Length: 194
Image (cartoon, rainbow, N blue to C red):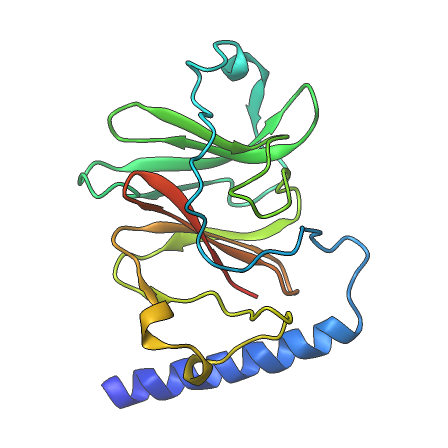
């Protein structure tokens, strides 16, 4: 059974690489644009996106009608309480982002005009795939410094990340570009997934 899973994962990875490499030849104009990064999880302190830092932010946030699904349930912080993540829009600047309501009722926001985790974009209008990345799954930043997609065999074991809790998978539909947002030591981190 493990060999079947490994074979399926290897086949999926190969197809993804082939698909994304052919997409690179004809990239759509609405592709995500971001500043070059070293594609390692950010260890910079994150901005406080909680309503306490801007008490009126909740008044300017509406649930996205563009995205489907626009809400997922997961356990980002591992406290066994369900957390709810929604794609929302700031009605002032029309930019999309994430509203993360933890089981303990703490709320955080990512995007909506504020750069997301040092990735060079502040709007997730482009998201076509929005789902839970399950706890315990292994991921890695799959793009090297030259922008080439790396396979499992090209990544050091030490660079692979086993999600400590659930994460948030966002990706551009039928194109390359996206990643996984997860909590590590109380801070949001990014794993690049082309």
